[in-house]
Image (cartoon, rainbow, N blue to C red; front, side):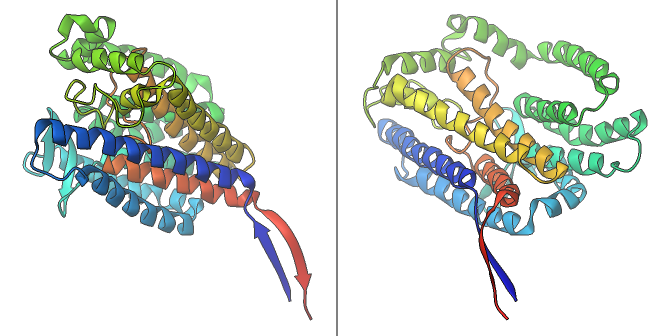
Length: 378
């Protein structure tokens, strides 16, 4: 009887290590920002409530990640049509008054057993999975323009529902992930380049005519125009990042988290991190995300199957592109997108979805396992 042992590729361990460092730093910053808010505003809740909630969502994410890892990425791709249907129904439910929960004018959440679920966070991964599944099913026959239009028409349904919530940032991220897949799959430019240009132009005109979008753009160009409104967060974020200097004020010593930068634990948590840990700390965080990008794309390029290559590449792009957008917003280089920093910002659904995404990449990395040896027994 032949038995063999395998050792996971060092890339897998490095990827997990980078994730845990980011997650641990995020927990420290969430506690730092939320506890300060509780004490400063004399709120009647525990200073540990936010971090315990983050740990709860993280634990649920780990459990789901283990299930997904054991299920295997090929099964995830196989079941992607059913998952897309299920989460499309959830997206519809979020838009129904009395069912979906509205926060700051957006209907993105469902309340389940006292916990908030944001279906769009999971749709970010399901749409690329469905796109890969459908495209690879044409491996033995010609992929025509009609097939492409049917495929795009199907994924356009959940994307439009996310846009209606409204959630432009998530819609843009999903769209970019599909665009990246079109490039990786070498789908003919004539199928998608011109239609994409038309959609971008029409979408840009439509979005600019939305009051909150045009307001965000104006604030992005000149935050000082509305310091008491939409320009407050970007302006205070710049102050926080600049106040950190090279080495920062030190852990827990941020001043901007004392009601100057509201809801800092979400989209703008990197600004408080920059204030407390300085230029050195924010560069370390950026390097961690760059490492995850390199490791993820290495796993993708080393995969033994096209499905693994497409899936690992799209997930790696999703995670690192969100990090790029968030850090760009915090630094004032990009307009506000409403996207948080993966594994670092406070957020339940986004944390679970991003942990699941990491588990899929790790499952694909099993194809890179190194054989330790083989023993033969008679």
